Image (cartoon, rainbow, N blue to C red; front, top):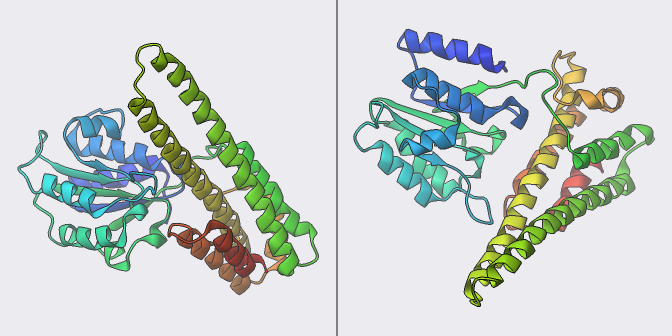
Length: 324
C-alpha cells in the first residue's frame, strides 16, 4: 500500500516510540515521491537531527552509497566499504546508518554480498535502500527488508519536454485500429527519435561547458594531460546522464502501462494523470492479461538495457513483445 510521505513518517515514528523499528527498509516509489527526502527526514527523526539532505549525513561520517562510473553500477567494493563502516564502533550519534540510493543498480555480486549484513546486522543498525524499481532486486533481499512504498503528492510530477513527447507517442496507440508489427516498429522508431534528442541535448550542454573550461585553462598552462582527463570525464558524464534520462522515459512508459491496469480495476490513484484519455482508451481495448503481459515486456526491456546488450536490438525486441 503506497503512503504519502507525512503518513509514512508518522507510522515510522510510532514504530520508533514502541521500540519496533526494523533494521532495514526498502524505500520505493517514483522519483516524484522524493525517496531521498524521505530517507533524510527518517534519519533526522531517529537521531533527533535536522540535516538538509543525504550529503549532509554523509558529511557526518555515515556511508551513502550511489551508482558510480559510466555504467552507473554499484559494485561489490562499495558494498564492502559500507559493511566495514557499519561493523565499526557506533557513529557519532550512537547509530550505524547505511544508505544505498538507486539500490537496483547493485550488481548481483554486490547484492549477494549485502545479504550477510541484512541477515546479521550489528546492534543499532538502520539500513535504508532506495529504489524506484524494486522488481530488479534479488528476492532474497526483498524478503529481508520492510518496504515503504511512497506516493507522490498531488500535482508533484513535472514532465519534461521529452516526457511529453513520449506520452504523445503512446497516445497515438489509441487512434490506431490495432498495434501489430508495423505499429510496434513505428512506436520503437518514435521512441528512438526521442532518445536521440535527449542525447544531443546532453551532449551540447556538456560540450559547451567543456569548451568554456578549456579556454580558461589554456590561459594558465600548456599541459594537455588535464584537458584530456576532463574530456574523458565529460564523455563518461554524457553517457551516464543519458542512461539516467533513458531510465526516466522507460519509467514513465511503465507508469502509463501501470495506469491502464489501475484503470481496469477502478483505482483512485494514477501515476500519469496527464494521460488519462489514452489510458482509458487502451484500458477499454486491452484485456487485463494482455495489459499485464505488455507491462511485463517493458519491465524486461528495462532490465535488458541494464546489461551490455545492444540498445537498438533490445528496443526492437522489447517493443515487439509489448506492442506487436
